[in-house]
Image 1 (cartoon, rainbow, N blue to C red):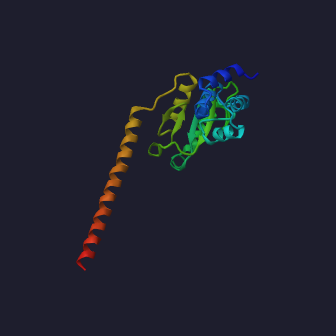
Image 2: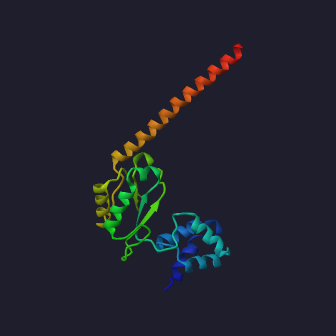
Image 3: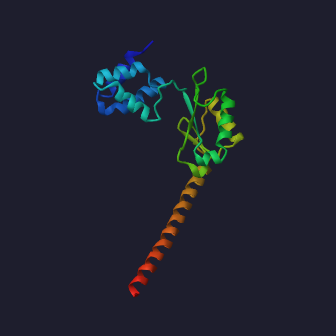
Length: 198
C-alpha cells in the first residue's frame, strides 16, 4: 500500500521546489530503498514537472534505483583494473555468501549485489563497496570476512594500511608524471634553442 503521507511529508521537507528534485529523490531512495512509481508520480504532480523529466533524472544517476534495493548494497567493481585483478572471483564469492546473483536482492530485503564499472580506486584493485565503505585488494578470505561482518551487522571500514597504500600509489603517479613533464619540457627547450642557432 503506497504511503502517500510519507511521500507528501518528504516533498514538503524539500521545499516543493523543482531545484530540489535530486535531494527529494535521495530522500525517497533513503526511505524506500528505491524510487517507487507512486512517489515519482506524486512529485511530478506537486512540483509541476513532467513525469518523464523525473524519470530522466532518476535513471541518469546510478545512486537511484527503480527496483527495491536491500538495506545494504554491495557494489563489486568489474572495471578493467578490478577485472584483471580477479574481481570476477570476488563477485562469485559474494554471490555464494549471500545466496543471490548480481542485480538481485535477498528475499529478506537485507542485501543487494550490484556490479559497477569503476569506483576510482584502480590502484588498490579489486575493490568492493559495502554501503559507503570501500574495501580494497580483495581476495577470497578478505571477501568472506567483509561479508560475514556485514551479515553480522558490524560493517567494516577501509583499513588504514589500504588508505596509506592508495595514497602512496597516487603519489607515485604524481611523481612519475612530474618527471615526464620535466623530461618533455627539457626536450622542447633543447629544440627551441637549436632553432634559434640556425
